[in-house]
Image (cartoon, rainbow, N blue to C red):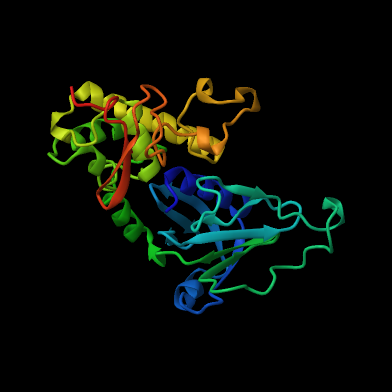
Length: 305
């Protein structure tokens, strides 16, 4: 499932390529036909990402609400002026990377014929958005619905603070929310009502970077440590939104730091490194299940104090 940084990048792409345009909205697959009819020929006026949810706001007060889930993905394409991301979502053969593509065609781009509109849909396209210069196709999402602004606000009200929005009061709300619970930290970080957008990769890496025992209860975490956890989440996810990848190791751990970004196998401290030496202490990285997902951690670096 894409983590929060991917959804924020995706929302930014929609704003870049479609904002202010009157869009043709359809459901080639047919499952979203009624919702598409409500949004068709309306102007996109705003895009909001919160956690793993995206909201596309239209000029008549309706919102396209999308949650990609495990198998959702967007494809973009268009002319040389249209820039979008290709196959954002899952399944993700390149891990957490988002592969950007110009979608460039036509003589000006050194490509084929001029853009004349979207091609015929391929596969089960739940919804297609098409503007003057390109299109976006959605497949396989857990949630795809046309809702009112009030209904969108209700969805947001059920979610915890998003580190990438980092609105006033979010840090304090996170600290209070975590410290009010007896639940282990590794479960709390996966609870979208506590913090929105953190997934399995961020969970493992945040707990390692903060030297926190995954089984430590939220109530046992002091305010300073909880604040540090929030601030590191903001920093790490901001890096992910910038780079299009989750990179949690500093350049000192990379074979070729001058290259700018590390190789995938050098990007993380513990995630998917079960049985390998901890990059800090040399002990084997451990693996277990917690909150229905695989948890990677270092039993030495993350001992409870």
